[in-house]
Length: 106
Image (cartoon, helix red, strand yellow):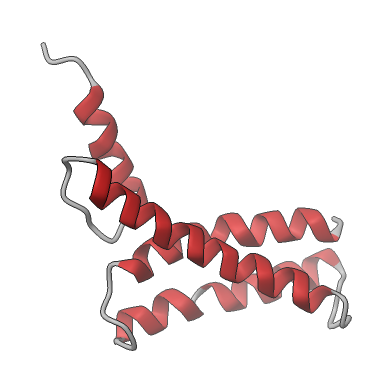
């Protein structure tokens, strides 16, 4: 695996956690968990990819981490602002609700 692939995986991994984080009170237990649960997974990807602790990987992976969190938060605010469905902390549940809105009624 190269650095770009791992960065894309880290970004995609953090989008649901950023979505969850956007629906919690700042510095609460859920906020802390939504920010820190992905960290061991990212470390595992670093080890699996064979990067170890090379200095060049830190800015790329930390940037992907925070960009994923930011995109998840923006998706949450978008779903609240532009859909009729009430929001929750789960991106997958909310996306199912949004798609149900657009399905034709029988």
